[in-house]
Every structure is written in C-alpha cells, then in structure tokens.
Length: 523
Ligand code: FAD
Image 1 (cartoon, helix red, strand yellow):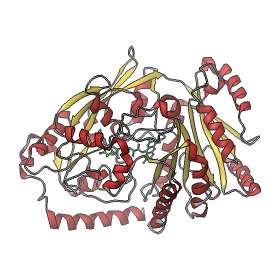
Image 2 (cartoon, rainbow, N blue to C red; image 1 turned 90 degrees about the vertical axis):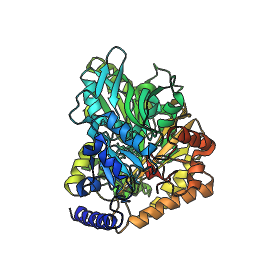
Image 3 (tube, rainbow, N blue to C red; image 1 turned 180 degrees about the horizontal axis):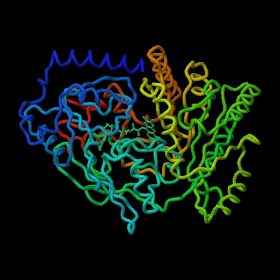
Image 4 (spheres, rainbow, N blue to C red; image 1 turned 60 degrees about the vertical axis):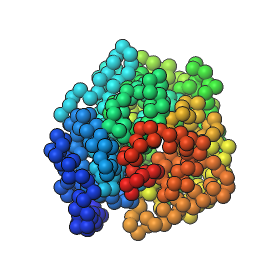
C-alpha cells in the first residue's frame, strides 16, 4: 500500500508539472469538436490510469484518453490525426501489461481498448461448425476461454497468464508451454480486422491483404489496431495432469525437454502426450515460493528440493513443467501412457510431482498468485523483466554464463523460465523475431524489484545481454525493448526494410504506438 501511495504522489507531481507546461497544447482543439469528443477524457484520473504499465519502470502521461464504444470511434480519431496538419500519436492500450511503456502515447491519445467491450455482449462469437471464434481485440483471454468452453471448444495456444487482451498478446506473439506443439498465438489466427494508421478498416488474412496480416501479428501495434481476430479452436479437455519433474543437471534437463517437444515423435507415441512443456530454474533462495503457482509444491516438496540443492552444491534445481490434457473417457488409457512416458525420462528418481486439476484451473494458474500479491501490495512494484529467445546450439553456454554465472551472484529471487520451442510452428514472415535455428529456447527472467534494488536488477539484465553479445549468442529479445534505432535495426535484421515499407504503407505519419520508440515523429 505504501508503495502505491508513493507512486500516486509521484504521478500526481509529474502530472501537475506536465499540465502546467503544456496544457493540452499539442492536441488540436478541433478534436474536441468531433462527434467522439464526449468519449475523450482529459481528467487526472483518466490520464493517470494509462500513465504506466505492469513494468512500473516508466511514466508517460498522454494528453487525452479515448474510451471508444464503437470501431468508428477509433477510426475517426486516427483519421483526424492522420489528416491533421500536426498529427499526434495514438496508442491502443489493452490491459497495460507491457513492461517498458509500449502502450503509451506521450503528448497524444491513449485508446482504452477494453472500453469497446463494455456493455457489448456480442464481441465473442463462436462458430461450432468451423471451429473458430471471432473475438474483439479488447477482450481478455480468460473471458474468451470461458465463452468458448460453453461450446466444448477452446483455443489451443495460450500465455501463462490470461488477464491480457487478445490484441495485446497478438501484438507480441503470445507464448507458453503449448507453443512447442501448437505454435504461438499468432500462428493460431485465421483472420484479422485492423484499423490502420490512416484510419482505414481492413480485413486481412494469409490470402487477403496478407502483408498487413503478417506485419500486424507480432507487430507491437505499429501498423494497425486489431479490432477482431478469428482464432482456431479445438475440442476442450476437462482435466489436466499437471506435472513437474526435477533435474539437477542442465544437460539431462534440456535433453528431456527437447525429446518431449520433438516433432519427430509421431501422433501415437507416448511422447506426444504432453500438450504443454515448459521448464524453470528454481534458485535456492527462490524455493520458498513463486507467484505463478504458489500451491503446486508443498512445504515438504520444497524441503526435499532444498536438500538436493545442498547435497549437490547447486544454486538451485531445474524442473520441467508439463501438462497432459484428458477427458474422463480416456482417463485410464492416459494414466497408463503417462506412466510409460515418465519411465523414458531421466529426472531425479522420486522427484516427479503430479497434480490433477481442471483445465480452467491449469490455464488460469497464475491468477491466484496475482490476487495474493495484490493483497499484500506487491503486484504493483517495478518489474524489470527480460525475455530472450536463445538458439538451442548455445543454450548450455547461456546456462553456464547466465544462470550459473551472472544470476548465481544475484541477491534477487524471481522466476527463471527456460523451455524450448520448434521454429517450424512459427511463420517467420510475421513481425515477431525468432532465432535462425530449428529449436530455440525462451528464457524469461521475471523479477520484481523494490526501488532500492531496481537499478541493480537493470544492470544485471544489461550484463546478460552483454554476455550474449560477447559470446556471440545470436539471441532475439521477446517483448523487445531498445533505446536506439540501431538496436531496432539489429533486432529486425534482414526484415528491417520490410518493417519500414509496412510502416510507410500503413502508418505513414508514424502515429501508432510510439511507446516502443522504434520510429516516431512525436517523441
Ligand atoms: P498492452 O500492454 O496494453 O499493449 C501491448 C502493446 O500492444 C502496445 O504496444 C499496444 O499499443 C499494443 N496493443 C494493445 N492492444 C492492441 C490492439 N488491439 N491492436 C494492436 N496493438 C495493440 N507474454 C507471453 O507471450 N506469454 C506469457 O506467458 C506472458 N505472461 C505474462 C504474465 C504477466 C503477469 C505479464 C504482466 C505479462 C505477460 N506476458 C506474457 C506479456 C504480455 O503478453 C504482453 O506484455 C502483452 O502485450 C500484454 O497485453 P496487454 O493486453 O496488457 O497489452
């Protein structure tokens, strides 16, 4: 509570300073004479509500916030800016769970996308026959899940946390343990409706306006605003065997992970049983708990793992996290296959932990942790997260230099995710950048900071990037953040020219989503 009061005071101060000096000077006053004027707010509460994000590392107060109730409201705003002699920036904001101010619009207008869904019950439409759902870009994945389950159907590809908007995750990629098998969320989209930086409403897919479709998916809001996505559905399972297998050595850990996600395992093979494969390194000092699933390990499990760590002189243990979906009809058969499968893996004997939970409980597992952290005021602290994709060929070097090196001396506990994905489940023409190897790992360093240790954690993140650069590890940042155009050019590599061409075609005035600081005339 103390921290949030402190932040509120800081924001209020920044706001007063900003309003004193600019007093909405940068927005053309004609804007407030448009039909949408009643949906544009400039009061403190509205501005403050979009001035920071989950990362809590940046503060950027826009001049106004649009609360749209129709797609027309959004296109009117964009068209007005686009045709103005002095275009201003506009950023769609989903649920504001970015880390580095990506959904901000300094001196511009933030669009509260979720306002589109308020009072509209028709923004999620399931087609049972065609097995897809048409969903508004402003909808939360958790709501989409509950709606599709009414028809016995479900999207296949998820993020670990479901209180994110469809437009927000499709603008970055959308990954989790299902990605190795079903591809990221952006690989599970048939069609999009997009409002471009010129205010045009365009329907696109792989066959129609495909350049826009491919650019927008993973495109960080740079080319258009997703107002509808048509997402693939499959029959929904009822239950899940939620599994954690402990390893003390990285070679066996990664070998088993790769074995589990191998595309060479044919459909009938027990190895195909896992519908989800992730993995973590649990630092000894982090053994006490994790917000992602506080109840998975019991106190006794933690004691046993701590013992392992002490005996082996390790800084922590690795565990594979897997999930096997099933329905009551096939429960017996799945149990038998799971037993066989576990026999093929090389985790520490007696260190397999299995819980049986409902499908919804498994998918929404992070939410409980969120509620607990909110209760004690630790959800809204700074989060200097770092997410990288690391080529498989260098994962052991990465482990030695980062996990056993830089992080072994770190005083901060947190979550360290490390799990492999198959490149062939991605479409490299989309905007999310991935390494140039058939298998690559995602590394997620998800730490909470206090104002006291924030700088130290940021420096550790920098050290990790420096280490990779020096060691020639050709990583790509996931949820990328660069301070310079040179950084962005390197990030996009061969695709940089295409990025520029798409920007020139769909957002020539550089209006959209300036918070990523890629190209902008407004910052
Ligand atoms: P915002 O933060 O509001 O916006 C993100 C970006 O997308 C901005 O650039 C914004 O301008 C743009 N944008 C927003 N809406 C639209 C739209 N409709 N059309 C076009 N552009 C739009 N990611 C994963 O892949 N896997 C995970 O498991 C995962 N877990 C997470 C857990 C937590 C607790 C948090 C905080 C984040 C996690 N993320 C994960 C990252 C998350 O997917 C991204 O930060 C995502 O962009 C956030 O969605 P949002 O709705 O909050 O979007």
